[in-house]
Length: 174
Ligand SMILES: [Zn+2]
Image (tube, rainbow, N blue to C red; front, side, top):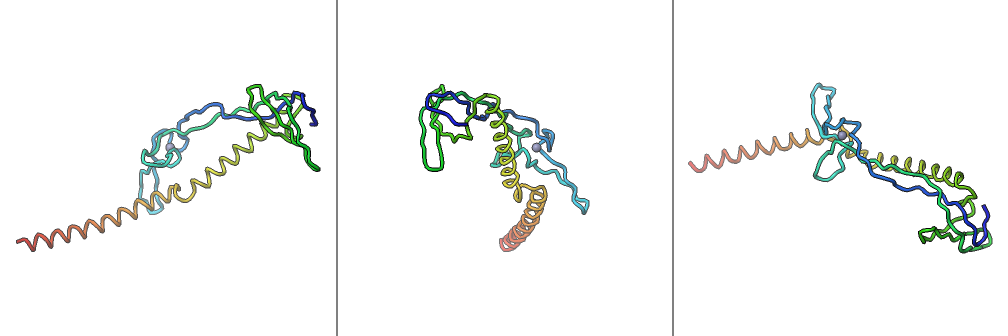
């Protein structure tokens, strides 16, 4: 919409409302997953869905953010005009400053909330996409199983070598 200095306009906004922890959907709070490989071997592995990374391991619950779309009434306190664009300078009741293009402000709260809702949905979708990509290679079930099997083999091999060396040393001491 077009506005003039001194007008009160509605600005779409969404904010993170509260943090909620929900029981992990993958492991149902058990923190482990039972995996059966094609060759019949079975493993209990850490659930990666509720593992925030680092050393503390899976939590059995995952964090979600409840978000809230809203419209906020703001006063137009300034305008910047260029050949192609208009930019409004807005001030909220709390005293914060914002810039908005004409298509970013609305005459009614309902319209602002509707746009805020759309922005919020797009934001959530892109967040989920980002998390999915981040979780990909290193957090797949297969990766965990492969990693641990490889480590077991490696350590078994080490163990044999250490035993062998110790055996030789004991032989020499005699
Ligand atoms: Zn889990």
